[in-house]
Length: 247
Image (tube, rainbow, N blue to C red; front, side, top):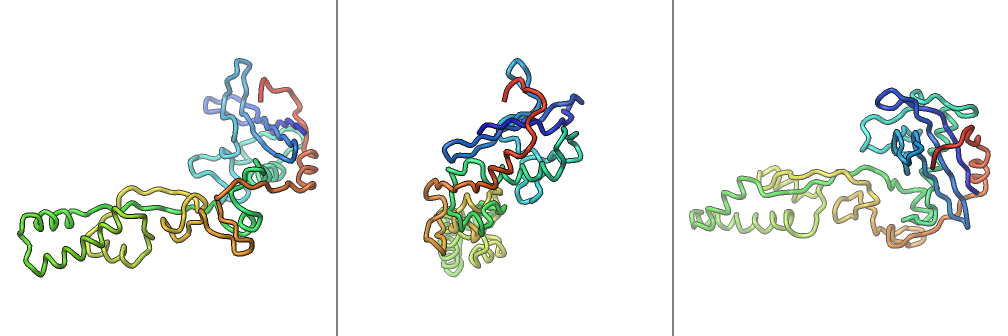
């Protein structure tokens, strides 16, 4: 199956109308979707191409891509005949769940029950000015014996957090070192739970075993069969009412 659809038009940054074309393919059990906004005859496009689903607002807001500050909402689309907001949300749902069904990082239980896409904030911990000063004074022999013993204990803890393997940011050790001024926050990064493991954050799912089948998330690419009713749903959507320059 190869199906090309024109969802409607959307205004570009310079006010031009650009058609949203989407292609769905299903062959040998493999399903994929891609699209282009405003394809031009010279091979360029007025908007994005490829996985353009990330540019649109989804029914399930957890599926929205936070790299885009202004997602395209249904009210910004002039829908082609046979299309409306609900049907387009259905399409985005199918795209999100079944695209590249032969390259899934999780088993069916994990994909169904785990929040793989949950946003998680990772924090890099760095030495504070207080720690730097104590370290310099220790090197120069300016600490009292009691303070030097304190520094030895704290130094081992700080190095464990800032240099050794990643540590859970919610750990009592991190909280205490932060409260006492020995460490400070460095770079912050947002990742999804499926891309980090538990050593980096308590919510990390990478390489975590499924309690039902034992498969470790992300340890291989798995194929999940697309239900016949999903293929039938895709085939029922209106075909493009005009031919795109390319897709």
